[in-house]
Amino acid sequence: MTHQPRTPAGSPEGGQFAATTGAEGTSHLETPIATIDDIAEGRATLSRNPADTDTRDWLLDAEATLATRMGTSVPELSILASSQFWVVRHAVARHPATSDAALLALAEDKSPDVRGAVAANPNTPSTALAGLCNDSVPFVRATASLNQPQG
Image 1 (cartoon, rainbow, N blue to C red):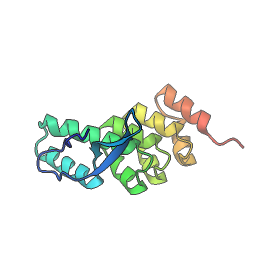
Image 2 (image 1 turned 60 degrees about the horizontal axis):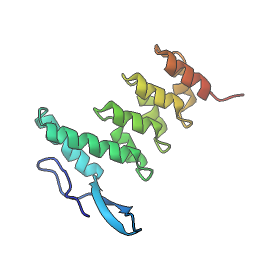
Image 3 (image 1 turned 30 degrees about the horizontal axis):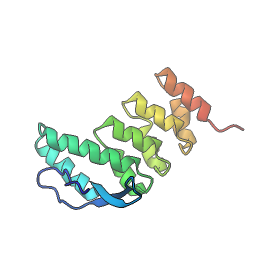
Image 4 (image 1 turned 180 degrees about the vertical axis):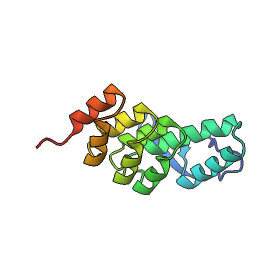
């Protein structure tokens, strides 16, 4: 079964399609995975009309889907790190391919959940972990302390 893509008004209908396997082992296409260009268009649309809940919902779903994919590139993750949605920033902070620069920026995020995810990422630079060991939120401090290199 093929689903029509949910894209914000004015955005391209493109995007990659995620293939899934059905119950009989047959492959079929599901909801398309938005490209980073689709997301940029969705962000622009939402900035012009912040009350557009359809675009906001689409953008959250598109960004979250891309942020949780193992095949998402480092440049895409860097763009997603600036998402207005904390759940997207959290997913980027947990992603194993997130760059040091993005992790350093996310270590200063306003959301303690995002900072906690940075603290738990085994690839987080030691400078970010050192700062997170002094975070105002106990679980962030504890997580960063547990992730410090032993030596």
